Length: 100
Image (cartoon, rainbow, N blue to C red; front, side, top):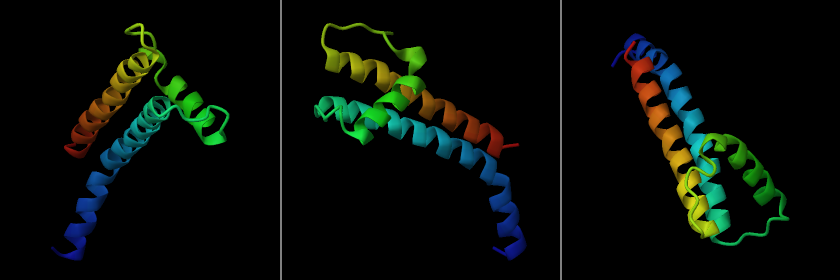
């Protein structure tokens, strides 16, 4: 691949890849919250509380979508669906933008 072809290839793919990277980071924040809850992490820790705040804000639409009696199952279902949503939407946007 020549330098010119390589440059055009990367410039064409960059916007969609950046959007997918952003949604991937959002999904990682949400999944980290799920892991912290399942492992009973110390809520007083700055990392755990900050991640919990961000995850709650990012998953706002999905909170209490399902209301099982178990708190852990509630977190896994609702936050897990939010993480999947971001990954699916990010993947779709990546494909659409990179195909333009």
